[in-house]
Length: 191
Ligand code: GRF
Image (cartoon, rainbow, N blue to C red; front, side):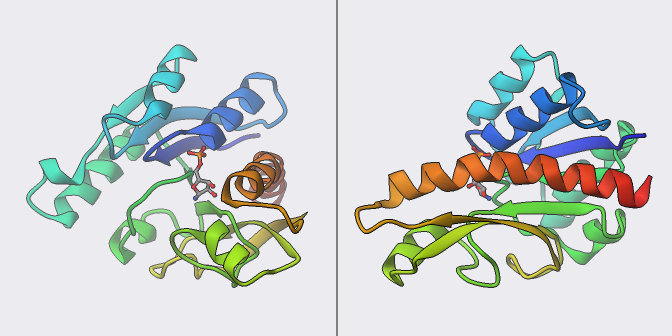
Protein backbone atom coordinates (compact mmCIF):
# COMPACT_ATOMS: atom_id res chain seq x y z
CA UNK A 1 0.00 0.00 0.00
CA UNK A 2 1.25 3.44 -0.83
CA UNK A 3 0.38 7.05 -0.13
CA UNK A 4 -1.16 9.51 -2.53
CA UNK A 5 1.66 11.98 -2.69
CA UNK A 6 1.42 15.71 -3.23
CA UNK A 7 4.78 17.36 -3.81
CA UNK A 8 5.26 21.07 -3.18
CA UNK A 9 8.15 22.79 -4.93
CA UNK A 10 9.41 26.27 -5.76
CA UNK A 11 12.35 25.70 -8.09
CA UNK A 12 14.57 23.11 -9.70
CA UNK A 13 12.57 20.08 -8.58
CA UNK A 14 15.25 17.38 -8.63
CA UNK A 15 13.92 15.74 -5.46
CA UNK A 16 10.42 15.86 -6.90
CA UNK A 17 11.58 14.24 -10.13
CA UNK A 18 13.45 11.60 -8.20
CA UNK A 19 10.29 10.70 -6.24
CA UNK A 20 8.27 10.61 -9.48
CA UNK A 21 10.83 8.25 -11.03
CA UNK A 22 11.00 6.03 -7.94
CA UNK A 23 7.22 5.72 -7.99
CA UNK A 24 7.10 4.94 -11.71
CA UNK A 25 9.81 2.31 -11.24
CA UNK A 26 7.93 0.75 -8.31
CA UNK A 27 10.71 1.49 -5.82
CA UNK A 28 8.00 2.95 -3.60
CA UNK A 29 4.33 1.98 -3.51
CA UNK A 30 3.18 5.61 -3.25
CA UNK A 31 1.95 7.49 -6.32
CA UNK A 32 2.55 11.14 -7.13
CA UNK A 33 -0.92 12.60 -7.60
CA UNK A 34 0.00 16.24 -8.02
CA UNK A 35 3.01 18.55 -8.09
CA UNK A 36 2.30 22.10 -6.96
CA UNK A 37 4.66 25.03 -7.30
CA UNK A 38 4.26 28.46 -5.76
CA UNK A 39 6.42 29.81 -8.59
CA UNK A 40 5.22 29.70 -12.19
CA UNK A 41 8.80 29.76 -13.49
CA UNK A 42 9.80 26.70 -11.51
CA UNK A 43 11.79 24.30 -13.66
CA UNK A 44 10.22 21.40 -11.79
CA UNK A 45 6.78 22.17 -13.20
CA UNK A 46 7.85 21.52 -16.79
CA UNK A 47 9.76 18.42 -15.69
CA UNK A 48 6.67 17.04 -13.95
CA UNK A 49 4.51 17.79 -17.01
CA UNK A 50 6.97 15.89 -19.16
CA UNK A 51 6.41 12.91 -16.87
CA UNK A 52 2.63 13.26 -17.28
CA UNK A 53 2.12 14.25 -13.68
CA UNK A 54 -0.70 16.64 -12.84
CA UNK A 55 0.73 20.07 -12.00
CA UNK A 56 -0.59 23.28 -10.54
CA UNK A 57 0.88 26.70 -9.91
CA UNK A 58 -0.48 28.32 -6.76
CA UNK A 59 1.25 31.60 -6.09
CA UNK A 60 0.69 33.46 -2.85
CA UNK A 61 0.79 36.77 -4.77
CA UNK A 62 -2.47 35.84 -6.48
CA UNK A 63 -4.30 35.62 -3.17
CA UNK A 64 -5.51 38.28 -0.75
CA UNK A 65 -3.91 36.61 2.23
CA UNK A 66 -1.67 33.74 3.26
CA UNK A 67 -4.79 32.05 4.59
CA UNK A 68 -6.46 32.18 1.15
CA UNK A 69 -3.26 30.90 -0.46
CA UNK A 70 -3.13 27.96 1.92
CA UNK A 71 -6.84 27.29 1.43
CA UNK A 72 -6.13 26.95 -2.30
CA UNK A 73 -3.24 24.60 -1.56
CA UNK A 74 -5.38 22.48 0.76
CA UNK A 75 -8.16 22.37 -1.82
CA UNK A 76 -5.81 21.25 -4.60
CA UNK A 77 -4.20 18.56 -2.43
CA UNK A 78 -7.46 17.25 -0.95
CA UNK A 79 -8.96 17.22 -4.44
CA UNK A 80 -6.34 14.61 -5.33
CA UNK A 81 -6.86 12.74 -2.04
CA UNK A 82 -3.27 13.43 -1.04
CA UNK A 83 -2.39 11.76 2.25
CA UNK A 84 1.34 12.52 2.38
CA UNK A 85 2.59 16.00 1.52
CA UNK A 86 6.26 16.13 0.53
CA UNK A 87 8.00 19.48 0.50
CA UNK A 88 10.98 19.56 -1.81
CA UNK A 89 12.54 22.98 -2.04
CA UNK A 90 9.22 24.68 -1.21
CA UNK A 91 10.02 28.21 -0.08
CA UNK A 92 7.05 29.04 2.11
CA UNK A 93 6.36 28.45 5.79
CA UNK A 94 3.13 26.55 6.34
CA UNK A 95 0.76 27.53 9.13
CA UNK A 96 -0.75 25.41 11.86
CA UNK A 97 -4.08 25.48 10.01
CA UNK A 98 -2.48 23.86 6.97
CA UNK A 99 -0.46 21.34 8.96
CA UNK A 100 -3.49 20.23 11.00
CA UNK A 101 -5.10 18.97 7.80
CA UNK A 102 -2.38 16.30 7.56
CA UNK A 103 -1.45 15.26 11.05
CA UNK A 104 2.23 14.23 10.90
CA UNK A 105 1.93 13.63 7.16
CA UNK A 106 3.81 16.69 5.95
CA UNK A 107 7.53 16.11 5.49
CA UNK A 108 10.44 18.19 4.22
CA UNK A 109 14.01 17.65 3.07
CA UNK A 110 16.80 19.96 4.18
CA UNK A 111 20.47 20.02 3.12
CA UNK A 112 22.10 19.80 6.55
CA UNK A 113 22.32 17.51 9.52
CA UNK A 114 19.56 19.14 11.54
CA UNK A 115 19.38 20.67 14.08
CA UNK A 116 22.49 22.27 12.60
CA UNK A 117 22.14 24.96 9.95
CA UNK A 118 18.42 25.54 9.72
CA UNK A 119 16.91 27.91 7.19
CA UNK A 120 18.39 29.29 4.01
CA UNK A 121 21.95 28.70 2.72
CA UNK A 122 22.46 25.60 4.85
CA UNK A 123 25.36 24.38 2.69
CA UNK A 124 27.11 27.76 2.95
CA UNK A 125 26.53 27.83 6.71
CA UNK A 126 28.14 24.39 7.06
CA UNK A 127 31.20 25.48 5.03
CA UNK A 128 31.55 28.66 7.07
CA UNK A 129 31.56 26.62 10.27
CA UNK A 130 34.22 24.39 8.70
CA UNK A 131 32.42 21.20 9.70
CA UNK A 132 34.02 17.92 8.62
CA UNK A 133 30.71 16.16 8.15
CA UNK A 134 27.47 17.50 6.77
CA UNK A 135 24.51 15.87 5.05
CA UNK A 136 20.76 16.04 4.75
CA UNK A 137 17.69 15.43 6.84
CA UNK A 138 14.06 14.58 6.26
CA UNK A 139 11.79 15.81 9.04
CA UNK A 140 8.14 16.23 9.88
CA UNK A 141 7.09 19.81 9.26
CA UNK A 142 5.97 21.95 12.17
CA UNK A 143 5.35 25.69 12.30
CA UNK A 144 9.04 26.52 12.73
CA UNK A 145 11.78 26.67 10.13
CA UNK A 146 13.29 23.19 9.83
CA UNK A 147 12.48 22.46 13.48
CA UNK A 148 10.19 19.41 13.21
CA UNK A 149 11.01 15.92 14.41
CA UNK A 150 13.76 14.30 12.34
CA UNK A 151 12.82 11.10 10.51
CA UNK A 152 16.08 10.28 8.75
CA UNK A 153 19.51 11.61 7.89
CA UNK A 154 22.39 10.84 5.52
CA UNK A 155 25.94 12.00 6.12
CA UNK A 156 28.46 13.45 3.68
CA UNK A 157 32.16 14.08 4.31
CA UNK A 158 33.28 17.63 3.67
CA UNK A 159 36.70 17.91 2.07
CA UNK A 160 39.03 20.88 2.46
CA UNK A 161 38.54 22.02 -1.10
CA UNK A 162 34.74 21.72 -1.14
CA UNK A 163 32.83 24.85 -2.11
CA UNK A 164 29.11 25.51 -2.01
CA UNK A 165 28.62 23.94 -5.43
CA UNK A 166 30.63 20.74 -4.87
CA UNK A 167 29.29 20.14 -1.38
CA UNK A 168 25.76 21.00 -2.51
CA UNK A 169 26.03 18.38 -5.26
CA UNK A 170 27.31 15.70 -2.89
CA UNK A 171 24.49 16.43 -0.48
CA UNK A 172 21.84 16.47 -3.22
CA UNK A 173 22.88 12.97 -4.30
CA UNK A 174 22.28 11.78 -0.73
CA UNK A 175 19.00 13.71 -0.56
CA UNK A 176 17.68 11.66 -3.45
CA UNK A 177 18.53 8.42 -1.66
CA UNK A 178 17.22 9.59 1.70
CA UNK A 179 13.84 10.91 0.53
CA UNK A 180 12.96 7.56 -1.04
CA UNK A 181 14.18 5.67 2.03
CA UNK A 182 11.99 7.79 4.30
CA UNK A 183 8.87 7.45 2.12
CA UNK A 184 9.35 3.67 2.20
CA UNK A 185 9.77 3.78 5.96
CA UNK A 186 6.54 5.78 6.35
CA UNK A 187 4.70 3.36 4.03
CA UNK A 188 5.77 0.51 6.32
CA UNK A 189 4.92 2.44 9.48
CA UNK A 190 1.53 3.89 8.57
CA UNK A 191 -0.01 1.71 5.85
C1 GRF B 1 17.29 20.80 -1.72
O1 GRF B 1 18.61 21.02 -1.38
C2 GRF B 1 16.45 20.64 -0.47
O2 GRF B 1 17.14 20.02 0.55
C3 GRF B 1 16.12 22.05 -0.10
O3 GRF B 1 15.92 22.71 -1.33
C4 GRF B 1 16.66 22.04 -2.35
C5 GRF B 1 15.68 21.68 -3.42
O4 GRF B 1 16.32 21.12 -4.54
N1 GRF B 1 14.99 22.12 0.78
P1 GRF B 1 15.45 20.48 -5.69
O5 GRF B 1 14.47 21.55 -6.13
O6 GRF B 1 14.76 19.27 -5.14
O7 GRF B 1 16.41 20.14 -6.78
